[in-house]
Image (cartoon, rainbow, N blue to C red; front, side, top):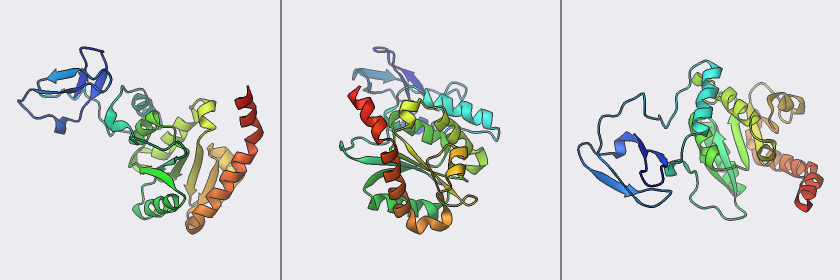
Length: 226
């Protein structure tokens, strides 16, 4: 259900399952903190926002949906983290295979990254709207039925360059060899790791991160001084 706060005009999206039928409910607006009172009624599908998104097999439709999720109004449930330490690093894992996902999550936990895993590209775009992740891990077959990998790569390519430089994007591949720089450039990612090398993911990743930081060291210092 879509709701507009009568006090600050903020637009909110609340899952239908959280709204009891036939009962008046109230809750504080996440923006102005004033009470919002609503009486539930049947939801019109044409006016509601589907929090999980829906991608057609057409990539253009997929990117339009990503854009819609990116520009959707504030919803507190969409924030990936309530609080992060100043030095905490974060990673979003866009991997469909459960076994591969567990291995990736374990590796980044050992590297002391705060991680969040998503199941489709629409949710990934919503999470990235509210947080600039230090790293994005994307598999070639992510959300395969809806061409999720292509949609996420398109989303990344459209980011402002100042934001894009802060994000290290890793593509997990079965086609490309690990650290294939030319293929990484072609796919607009920072690093490619072949799935056969997942056992060494942490070593490969940390080495590449060091090289990346060294490459941008002078540039970043110049920006700070300016």
